[in-house]
Length: 68
Image 1 (tube, rainbow, N blue to C red):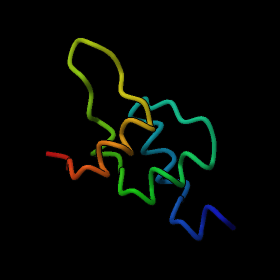
Image 2: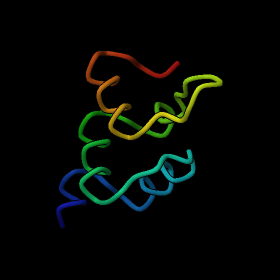
Image 3: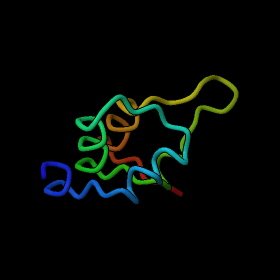
Image 4: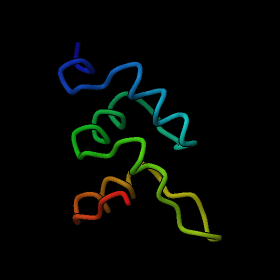
């Protein structure tokens, strides 16, 4: 019920998983969705350095960064 209220659908979960993003549970999926992080945005990576975490994506999105 909570996931549905926040727009976290099975398709959204698959989209995020398909990006290789490590998400630790429902609350993190909800945060990603509530902050506008979608599959295209989750493709963000720091080239050659490391994979970006779900929380880092939320913070970056909150600062106005958008997907190309």
